[in-house]
Amino acid sequence: MATEPQQQAVQPQPPRGFESLHQIISLDVTYITNGYLSVHTGYGDGYYDDLVIREGDGGKPIIPGSTIKGVVRSLVESILATISPNNICVPETCGPVPPVRKGACKNPTSSCDACQLFGHTKQRSRVTFHDAKLEGDPLCTLERHHVAIDRTYGTAAQTSGKGGALATMEAVPGNALQFNGKITFINPKEWMVGAVIETLPLIHYAGLGARKSRGYGDLLVQSVDLKFTLRLNGETTTPEKHKSACIAAWTQKIGGTDQFSQLREKIREEAEKALKEAKERETEEPALSEAPQR
Image (tube, rainbow, N blue to C red; front, side, top):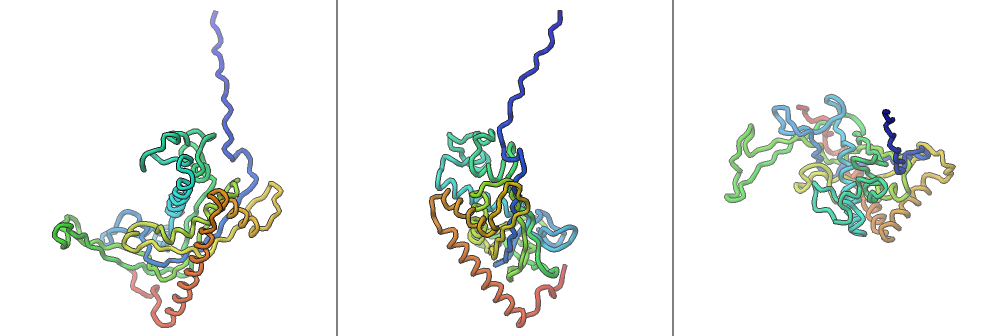
């Protein structure tokens, strides 16, 4: 007599923070270029060896959200690892993994703080970084030339290719251009929002994009405005008070230091100064948008 196959018991899935939708928070971020930007596509057009990433087909240059997220995640991981080295995972592709963390983030119930916020292959991210778009009229990008140097002789390296040792790159000028971006959180814990708010200004020091050692990628954060896109949890506090609570939660998590707030204010002042100087130059120099476009 044939027996019916036994059904395997369905294992309950651990909570991941998305079982219900009770809060969506948005950060409107204003970025100011303080140096050339080199966020490229990885391919050229026959003249440039590398082209900047643009909106749509040949539109304005943009700063991809993935580029911003990569820098912010790296900074947050570094800060958390400094506070508690054994409570942060390290991808095996990037370096050695502490024994107590090896493979732990594959289980949502034991994910480290960084993976809870930014996600991993088995867990969705609580935060989405949207592309930052250029404010104002389309501008002409600039050409920048770099020459590979032979380390032995100190002369131009003998390399094969179209330009030999010479590389011609397309770059976004650094004359206080404004990019507007958005960052969205779904059901975040307060410290998660605070971590991103307080870490964003550090891009000024860490740099963004390629060729940072050559002076590219200096980006200032002028402002970060918090908005409630959705509140179904009875939250009634004002956005400004909630922003302060999020920053306080992050500060407490990393040991109570207020150095990040001091840096954020310093960088905001630098951004304001850069904008002011750029406006003064506009009355003395022709606009970059009038430069010839290739």
